[in-house]
Each structure stands twice: as structure tokens, then as C-alpha cells.
Image 1: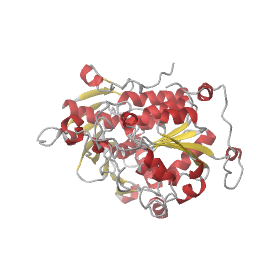
Image 2 (image 1 turned 45 degrees about the vertical axis):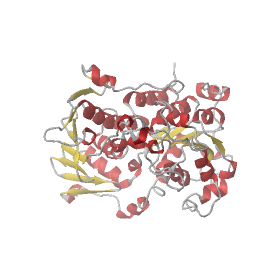
Image 3 (image 1 turned 180 degrees about the vertical axis):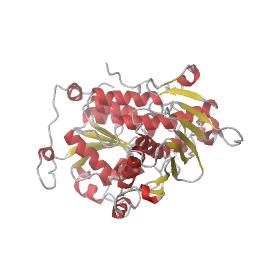
Image 4 (image 1 turned 135 degrees about the vertical axis):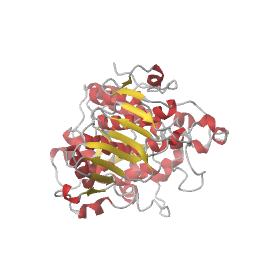
Length: 449
């Protein structure tokens, strides 16, 4: 879809962005016209949480969702909803002036924005983010960054070409305990790391293998199923392809889409994107990755999508998705570090010198509705300063790549050699073909010239 002239001029640098008042150092709460104007793409469960967490110097001026009733719900003044308190500030201050779009291509081309929040399903992340970069908009994109390897690199290149600030929603990078633990490993605090063991998250299922999911149902009123399918195959509508529950409850939008390979890598790209991201940061490998990957099939009798996977870095460090307990174990020459979300422990304890005060734990307690704000604030600060955010796009792409590599090794059921500099498998045409996927006409990745 062609971008508007205004967006084209902005993306080419002919028409400069107007600096908001807060970028000039004005104190107090920013006025309505000086706050960073944000469009939110995808207003399901995660979109609601992020709208509620946007700091005062950001203002949601447009929302987008393929299913129009979700936009109406988010903008509603309904007080009986379990989201009423969560969204009360937004509904009282900004919701009434919000524009609505079903197609994020139109939102990006037409709405008066400075930035976008991408909280849509995984298979829309990259296209929406690349279009936003081309339109001169900064981007906050939820993890995992991508559904397959090639599209992640396209987004990295777009952010670089158009000089955009792209923050990936890997919130543990903003948590003080995780920052300390990763730095401790990175500077040699536990010695050379021989092996890191992570929880073994499952991969996705194929729609072709599930008769119920392929059963055609009526598209709900207000839904544009063509837009939902986006770059993937246009399949008959079935609620299980996007939600775990049918309509009629406030939970209807809770993720079901991430079960399917078309749309996601399931928990191996969603939950494992957090743990693998900490590994990348701790090892100082944000711009590279492992060089060997293999599924541990000996004695394994389950589905391949749950098969344990091991990887090896050029340094010799092994990364193993083999743990059956949700903890991350870093085995070093001097001792062992166990990491978790917002916490860690070290054995022997004296290896951890001057750790953060435990009072910072409270800052990150609770569910997804109240722990995102500092990470979003880091993004907004970088939008003003033009510095790199704490979870930059290159790091997000490399972390997602690790998750994709695990999926490919499971699919091929054999050992693979990976060149992280070229981002290709060594002498393996079959594996290299899985770095990319066909995209449906009308949803191709934008050309960048």
C-alpha cells in the first residue's frame, strides 16, 4: 500500500519531525499537544496493558485492530469491566479523541503520529514496524521480534536506514536484578561459562494437523479476517486460530494464535525470548549467536515440537533448552548463577558483590499491567534523545533468531551449523530455505531501495 505524501516526506527526511515541548526540557506534565503521539496496533490483552502503562509524556491518539469491537471496548467508558481501573486514566483523558483504524497500513499512512506501539500478533510485528520506520515513526515492538529469521533482519536494516528508535519489549533488560546478574556473568564474575540450561519450551503446531481448527465458522461482526491473516495463508475463519475462548467474555482475546506455526513460534519464541535474551546479554553476544544447534533425540519419545535442543557458541559455551524447571542456570568456573525474572542467586554467594538493594523488587511485582512502564519510559526517553534503547532492535533480532534456530533443528531432526555473521546455515540448502517464508500478495515486506 502506498504511503501518504506526508509520510513519504517524513521517511525521506524532507519534512522534519517537530520536537515536542518535553524534548526541550519543559517541566511538569506535558500538555496534550507536546506529548509524544502514539498509535497502538493491536488492542487485545497486551495492548490494554501497554496503553495503561504509557507514561505521561506519551499520548495514545490512534488505535488499530482487525476486530473493531475490541477498539470500541478499549475506548469505552464502561465502568463494570475488569479493565475499568486499568484503563481509567486513558479513558478519562485521551480516549475520546482517539482515531480508530482496522488496517495498520492506513493508521501509519494517515494518522498524525510520532511513534507506534506494536502489540499485535507475532506475524504482524515486522511488516508494521518496517512501514512505521519508513514513515519516520519510532517503534516499540513486543517480543518476539519476528516469526522467521529473514524478516527480523529486514526490520533491523529498516531501523538503521531510516534512523528510527526501535525498542523490543524484553522488559527484563530494564529490571535492576537482571541487569546486575547479566553484567556479573559478562565481566567474568562466575568465571568462564561452560553451560547454560534453560527451560525447554514447546514449539507451535501446524494448522493442517488440526481438523477442528480448519473447520469453517462465520466471521464475527466487525472482524476483517483478511487483515488478521495478513502475510500468511488466507484460511477459513475459526476462533481457535486467534483466541482460546469464544466471544461473549472479556477474555475472548486471550492468545490462542500463538499455538500455530503460521502466526508464531508458540512458547519457544514467546517465553523463551525472555530467557534467551538474558543469555545473549550475559554473554555479550547481542550482535551474534551460536554456531551449532542440535536436537537431543537420543532416548526422546515425545513430539518433536517439545524435543530438547542444545546450541554451542564459538567460545565453547553451550546453551541447552533441556531444563524441566523454570529456572536459568549459568555454570561457570568460579560458581553457579541462577537467574529468574526480577531475581537471581549465586553459589558461592560472595561472588555477588554490591548487588542491588532488594527494595527494587517491589517496583516489578505484580502482573503485566504494572511492570511495563519503566521499559516504555526508556523508549520514550530515547525517542527524545535519539540514543539506543536498552533493548535495541539488533539484540531483539538475535534473540528471536536463537528461538527460530531451535525450531528449525526440531523440524529437520538433525545437527546444524550456523554462521551468525552471514546469518545462514553452512552448506545446508534445506535448512537455509527455512530462514524465509512466502508472504501473501498485498502483505509483502516493503522495498527499501
